[in-house]
Amino acid sequence: MIRSTLRTLLVSTALLVGMQTAHAEVLTFEGIAPAGSYVEAPAGGIDGYVFSGGAYVFSSNYYLGGQWGPGPYTGNGTDVLVSVGTSEFTSASNTPFSLTSLSLAAHGTSGPVFSLTITGNRVDGSSVEYFQVISPNPWDRALHKVVFSDFTDLTSVSIVGSNGAVKIDNIVLNAPDTESPISPVPEPATYALLLAGLALTGVVARRKRIG
Image (cartoon, rainbow, N blue to C red; front, side, top):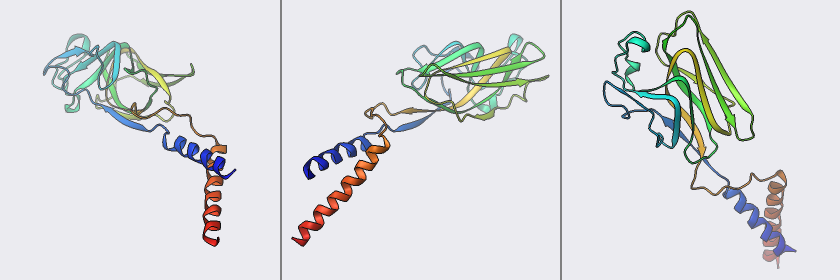
């Protein structure tokens, strides 16, 4: 009986130790576009995330003109991702992830009202949405931080802007460590069993001392 309980205790402990941990990743887009220019987001991905659709990386000193709006463009002195129309990003390893925050601003508008929708598509098929309307003028074009509390367990994030483009930087993402084994989250009964096993171990040790 004691051996069986101790064996179960070891298994429960292994489950707790083997729980998957997560790490934060900050996408900054630095050094991707040549100075004074812009490029499409690399097909091979950026720091483990693949951007598609109308996704471009602009260098910090690219001069805006024509369809991109009035220049010069400073981007707060940093390279940024520019989403034109609709863009999307996913994990290159197809691992679920969470979107914690990002910095964004209007990048140039073609109408009196600029709206932005960010949608997180979850593993279970549900989705979560962030919506922002900027009217009649875009923000001061300085980047503003937006924090998300429920963009979790995502397979992809889509970005849709109407009447213009949006610049994005400092995307903070959390994803499980790929090196860690994927184990189910222990049930409450497992914790109870672990505590019972520890108590039993103490009783056995005490009897040995008395004997």
